[in-house]
Length: 207
Image (tube, rainbow, N blue to C red; front, side):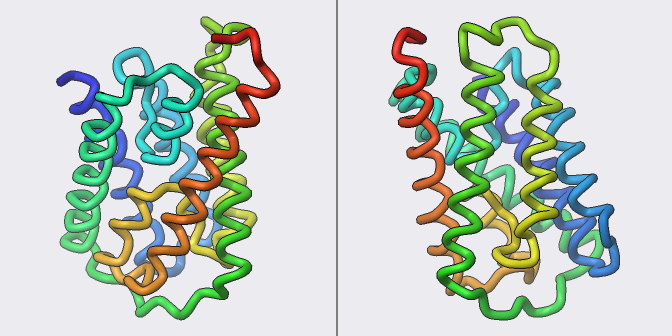
């Protein structure tokens, strides 16, 4: 149960930070910096308990990599989604809703979400689960920074979710159209799967 409480808390503060910095609409560079930073500190805070996934695509990648049991996956994902939705309502209460989101370019958004979710899960697996990086102290910084880089790079194209739990929560805050959720779900899960498969190919002896 401790793992799932940690996943709820970490995902909650990730999405709360997204809402509080993005909804006002004038955050500029502050939003990506804050989002990457809160993910970094929550990874450091919860990594030793749950692995600090805070993202169903990461959980799926960790499962394929062999560091998570199938029985844990539904509980991890449920905790992440509940934490994200609770944070969305908290952010909405604190600062209101965002300006109505515009339509996404489907092709560009699919590519953007796939690429940076792949990058995120690839980084997580290599810095937080690989034998060669066991005991390192930089994993949280690396994970937070790749999300920050993604937000800066393609946030204006796809919204920069890289996380199905985030995608399911941001429509409550007016930051994504409900009709566009499938783009994030499809691309984010696909990116997570591909990253895990790539990790396994590149690290055949790391079981």
